Length: 306
Image 1 (cartoon, one colour):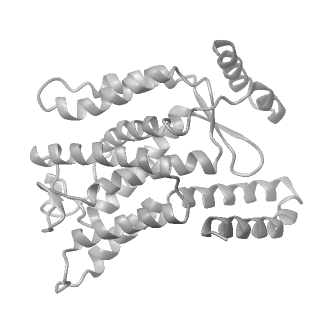
Image 2 (cartoon, rainbow, N blue to C red):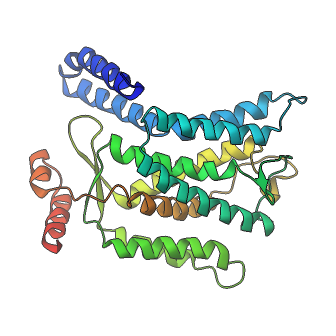
């Protein structure tokens, strides 16, 4: 039995034990659903959580006389984590290819940004390109891994998803703007408006337990961006990378940086749709769950447009 099958079996055993308690009242049912939501979120964040633990742990406890540089160890550890996820089938090969693409485009951006002084990697290492240690690309891979795993774990479907070409235009413009704003006008505010325009009618449907739950797409995107910003604060605290304003001492990353993560996370999400095609949530299912008319109408518009 593979590790993935063993985990599924353990989850089934836990559910069989906890379900009778949860079914005794609505309050217990909600509490159990919230617990499952948290556990699934943590499981989706497996790659990112391990990377953050490594960043903070090596910052606090890395020995001065270690045989390899801390950054090089992080590269090797990242490769090992990715390999383990694939070997245990916790991550699919097609997902890994898409995540690798995000890894590459992220590394290219890192090389450009560090050359322009946007941030620095203060420690020495061998495994690097220019001023960028190779572990940095895995930080982008963590975002892609989370999106792909969350899509599967929560069986995410969509109501009112925009035409795919609009999401690709948004993602490409966002990526290009990270380079071009150094030379011409920054169109970031326009990109935020564009994302609001194409996603304002979109809801994503996720299933923490048995009943599908609905959330506006824009709210979900903002929440994920916020948690990435929290993770970035841990990364800079661990001196994984440092902004110019932090060279005299660490401080909280300005909340404005969350906007950059919002756009990068959108790029990751669009790439993941290459292997997890956005699937429409059926209106009949929405009616069965008793959801709001706004969601049901969104589903009706989606079906009519299809």
